Amino acid sequence: MPKALVETMDKLVELHEGLYGIASRKTQSLIYSKRDELQQLVKKEQAFLLEISELNQQRQKQAASLVPVKPGAGVPTLQEIIDETECELMKKELELLKTRLTEAVMKLSEQNNLNRELTHQSLQLVSTMLNSMLPKQTPFNYSNPQHNHNSALPVTSLFDSKT
Figure 1 (spheres, rainbow, N blue to C red):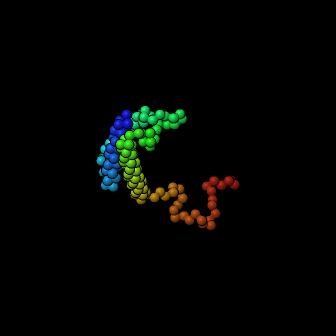
Figure 2: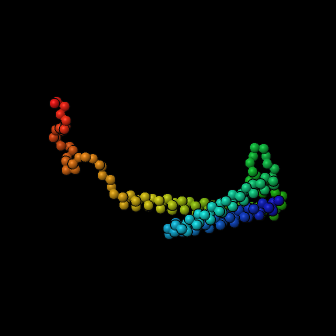
Figure 3: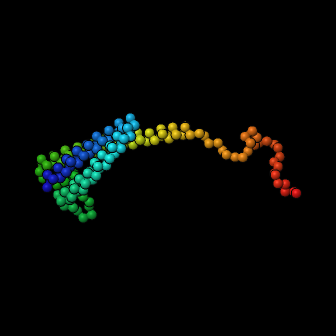
């Protein structure tokens, strides 16, 4: 059964590396404002994420079948599985997959942070451009713009209350 876990982990690593490739292409699409390409990449990214989610569920089932689950504990971690595995070759293979997956997730996280920053900067630029193109709103009132509001002239009403 550990062999099935190794295969699943290998697929997870490949999918995360593929997701990193998509994230890198998304960066280029953001930089060069390729909206159509960006939309296609987002669709591909969603398909990858769905497949990763399904494989992760499969990995959890496989992990639970390898290591006895303790009451109150969740799914065994990969390190717990490595510690419980008796075969040294299998341990080394799982350690290598753990390292590769960790590296792939870290690279992906950094790339996604860069994409988030680029998107934020793009939105700031658009907002600034819109604000500069929109006319400044002047207050609407019924007074004469030539009239000085601080004049010392007495204010007279159209309706004289003394009458």
